[in-house]
Structures are given as C-alpha cells and as structure tokens.
Image 1 (tube, rainbow, N blue to C red):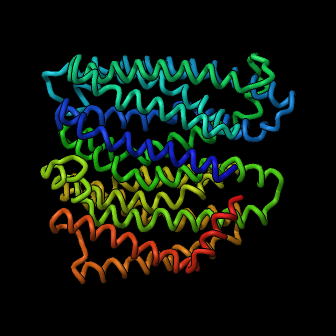
Image 2 (cartoon, rainbow, N blue to C red):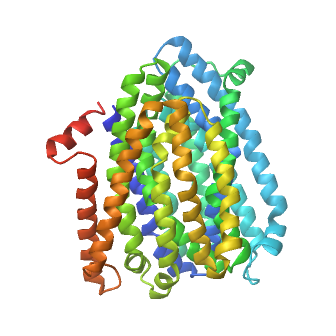
Image 3 (cartoon, helix red, strand yellow):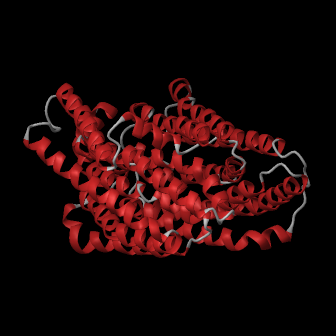
Length: 495
C-alpha cells in the first residue's frame, strides 16, 4: 500500500514540478517578465493564507486515517466530521474573500511597487476570490488522503493542474494575453475543482450522516487549532522572505525571486510525496503503540530521504545558472537569479530533511516544537538580512534564509527526536553528518578538477549529471548501502 500510494504521490508531485516549470517560460512570453511578478505575488498570497483553514484539513487527514476501517459507526463519524468542517470552511472562505477585497486598494498603493498602468486593485480582488475558492479543496484532499485514496486524490489534482496551468495557454493566445484573463481562468478552474472534489469525496463515504456535530469539533479542535497555529507560523516562516521582497523591491524583482523560490521547491516537493504516503501508517503504528516497528520504519524512511534529497539539492544549487538558462531561455534572468537559487536551494534541501520528522510529530499530535521553531525563523530571517546581509540586496535576503535554516536545523531535530523517539536521534545524526561531510568534500574536489558550472551549456549539463551520480554513490555508501541487495532490502522494508 505504501509503495502504491508513494508512487501515486510521486506522479502527482512530478506533475506539480512539471506544472511549476514547464509553463513559466510561456507565461513570461505572453505576459512579460515584470507582469510575472504579479503571479509570484499571487503564489505568495496562497502560501501565506494556507493557514486560514485553521488546521482542519490536517485534522481531517488524521481522523479519516484513524476511522478508515469500514465500520458503520466510523463511516458515519467521518460523515459528521466532514459536514461540520464544511460549514467552518464556508465561513473561512468568505472571510478571506472579504479581507482581500477590502484591502486590495491598500495593497496596490501602499505595499507593492507596481506598474501604475495596471488596475492592480482589481487583480488582487480576483486573486482573493480565487484563493477563497481554493481553500476548501484542502478539506476534501485531506479526507481522500486520510482514507488512503491517494491514487484518486493525485489523479484529481493532476487534472486540475493541467487545466489551470496548461489550459490557460490557448486562452492567453487566442483570447487575450493579459493578467486579468490569467486570473479569471484560475478562478474558473478553482470553481470546477471544488465542485468535483465535493461530489467524489462524499461518494466515497459509504454510510452517510450529514449532520453538524459539536461533539466532533470538541474531539478534534485542540489538534486542529494546534495545526492552525503551526500552519500560520510555518506560512510566515516560509514566506517572510517573499513578503520582504514584495515590499522592498520592484515587481520585476519579485518575479525573479519567485522564479528562484519555485526552483528551490524541488527537494520539498519530492520528499513530501513520501511523507504523505507514510503518514497514515505512522499514525496507526503510534496509535497501536508499536514503537519498535515505528522506529525501524522511520529510520529507513530517513535514509531514503537522504538518498533522494541531498545529491539532488547540491547539484541544483551548484549548477543553478545553467538550469535557469535552460528553463527560461533568458541569460538576463539566469544572471539575476542564479545566486538566489544557490542559497535557497541549499536551504530547502536542508528543510526537506525535516519533512519526515515533521510528519512524525503530527502522528503524535505534537505540534509545540514546530510552533517554537517557526517563530524563531520568522524573527531570524529579517534580523540576518537587515543587520548582516542588506548590502547584498536581494541575494542577501536569500542568504539570510540559508543562515536561518542552518541555525535552527540541529536544535529542532534534537528536541523533536528527544520528545518522540529518543533512540533515533544519534543514528539519524550520524547518517546526516557523514553524508554532508562526504558530499561537501566531493564537490570541492570536483570543482578543483574543473567539473563545475559556468562552461558551455552541454559541458555544464554533463558535469551536473556526473556530479549527481558521484554524490548519489557517496550517500549510498555512507548509509551502508553498497550493493543492490541492500537497496532492495531498504525499499522492501516499506511493505
């Protein structure tokens, strides 16, 4: 089951990566480099307002995972929980729409450094309505994921992604190539996606009891509110640099920083596929108190994460200029963003290693540590930037993100493991330390030997592939996986 769900999540996330990257050059071609900054701002708003579901989507995933045994009682409980949360989401969505509508003029005039020829207030209103309609989809996705309907969930998300990302291109080509048309299309796609999710999610609940239940809320509100607080802080922690960019720099710089941040998401997207697939299993092992099995599964998952994330993150960081040029076909954008990508990619590679521990904490319903460290990141990033790295301008902001992530990484992992699975911290730290040191030394040696970015494009591509192969072999070796049978045994441990 884990392999099938992980594969479906992988396909879904791979499409997420494709949709993030494949269409950006077309958006820039149709709309312009500066106008793409508004799309970057829209994505920042989506990420900032992700906490607005108040943790109910995460609570839904957890409760549906706990209740998915097929019994009549649990199916009816799922039904009451879903209906109760639907009513809450209606209030949330309306509130988000009202707030963004009311603040549109202020954002356009006081916050963004905008093109005065555009009706930016109207664009922000369209963004607000689109986001308000997208928020409730998290509830139904959470329900399907918790029920281990992950193949279905990912299929629906891929279809939605194709429609809104690729479907807008002929609209921009044949109807109108402006931002208003782009955001209207996003709005229409979100309406359709929400409708389809609503129908399919309810269809997958066999025994229905569509009643609002205050008892359901009493049972789950502590976990949901904890997730909401964590979500709010996590949203600001991951978006605080984008907020600073939108306030400080031109809308074109916002677009360039958004491009760099999008590329840097690759490690997180990939590891989240695995984390979401195993979360129901982690939750059940914890609920059954099968801690030995939980430790073995968790450490093996961390090995897989290290193998998948570390070599890829380092290569994408070190070869950022060539990758951006291949992606955007623009030497100007590559020159402007390669340093930003270098810092952000390393930061997100480190962050990706915390994704599985984070989901472990969710399975224990332990969110306090995530609240604390998210708050520290919110404070640290602006402090590093304003007091140390401001002269570097936008590059310094990206470097501030990396410094912050490095500063909080080990303390976060130590206290989280100490609270949940104390025996796993030292084995985890040993694996990570050996892999990081070995990869760092290898990169320096390869650079000294002339295997690096900045040469002709074909040579840079070959150097990047060679570096990835070498680093992957090094990581496998440091983790004790020196033969194919060792890797096979590791993958089989997920059964």
